Image (cartoon, rainbow, N blue to C red):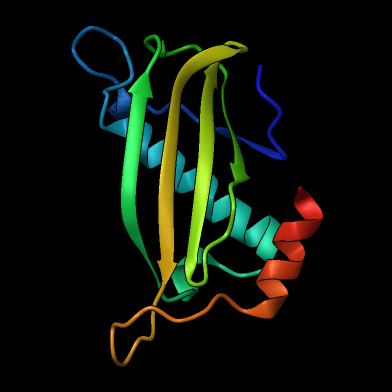
Length: 131
């Protein structure tokens, strides 16, 4: 498995399952969101819900289905930072093996203008320490 600096567990809920008993493909993006929230809380010491960020892009590649009884974790790391963007790389793991890989880009915005704004220095410092 690829080296990631952060990993968190997610619960597979009954509502996550499709008619075949697999986690629905759209739910994988929700797992990424849950991991992103945990990362912001644990690493940046802020709630993603309380930051002015928007999801600018999401790419997701499926490797295998996730079953109802799988133990699921999401590993993630921050790629090279932009001025106002926070690119993240993920690996969703089920039963210890890769179920999907993904990338997202969060952009910090000014809540009044909607324009992008630079990432706080404190965030940059914390993110650099994780590499």
